[in-house]
Length: 508
Ligand code: HEM
Image (cartoon, rainbow, N blue to C red):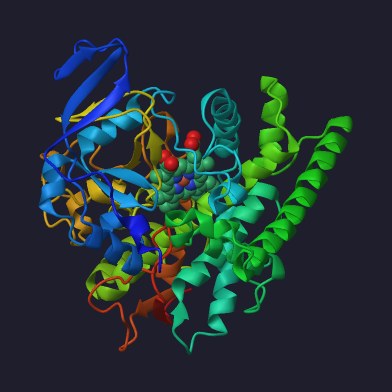
């Protein structure tokens, strides 16, 4: 941390700022002075997080907006900025501003392109999450039908039954629930995306390829590598281990892709259709690319498969972990959720059907509330033109982050915003003070989450089966007694969250 000066915002703090922007047809804007082919926008300066607060949040927490609680000043402006390394990041916490960014045409506010040297780019490449324009539209066209065809509560349920076997052999000790859920979701995604079992639940010992994946993710999520990009270029051990793990992981994924392509060609020759109730994502995308006449190359398939695999596992694991955590912390909620599950599904450990899952109103409220408290903080965009947010005018190229976490805790729309309260989703008044964009865990608009139905189904299946099979609680010495403590990763995840499970006595 010697190069602390990188944090310092060189723009002097004053109440008015002046931006010089090449002329466009924007004469309707206020505060414009025409001058020699240039216009000057005199906008009020967006509130800036102090240097010390930024340093503190980077060192102690996962994200700058998680200054807890978010200061009211930022809710009044709806936007604030923080200097991270070489750039100013503008964070939106207003539902109205989020709506503006998310619902406009996807080309007006495209995804921010993280530098090619950054680990996020090296791992995800230019698949659906990070591409823009025509390339993104082609990916999305192939992904939508593929996701609809790959939903299967049976695959998810079978994996949970395997997890129970592993849990029962270790039930005398509190279990790291996030880690277990990661193994469950990796296994589900392996089967759903590639028709491939990674074997994460066969034994406590993790398969080598999954350990490599974790090494990669650990590196990709290291915040300091984004704040100080030069670190990525240093010939240090950490970077070398990352590149080696990435090479091995890629080789593994390419082998699966090649195998599936051959399988598909063989099936075509024999004129066979698969006898499964669902189709693997990879195969569905290959089929859709033929039907739509959209060519998808080997590397693009790799980028998308890796994206689905990764986007789907940490996010869903966090969502279920926080539900399990709150149910451990509030036993009366756990009992109410279990009573509901038993009354709708019965007291037998079995895979629930999709129809029944929809009738679990209280459980669904728990899932919604968990996603409100801890959504996946992802959406980075870059302005292609000067854009007004209320009284603030931001220049072209500004980097914008839509903080769904911030929006989800705005006191304008959420009473006791930091309280976990599933009943807020069931009460009649719930819609009185809301805004259509005050709840956006899966983002919204054209670039919303393509896997949201998949994830919600997975959360429902896993929580339902856990509620029938086990009672659970926080160990006496838990660091999470007062609140969920988060690790310093890029995405939200709990820090060492151990849960004590006990098999219920009266289940069939
Ligand atoms: C609780 C679980 C999940 C949450 C909270 C979540 C959240 C999000 C959010 C906020 C975005 C927008 C990102 C942005 O604007 O940069 C997104 C996009 C995306 N998500 Fe999810 N997600 C979840 C599960 C999944 C699953 C299970 C998959 C796939 C298996 C998935 C695949 C994707 C993809 C491919 C995109 C990019 C869509 C596009 O750009 O067109 N997500 N997700």
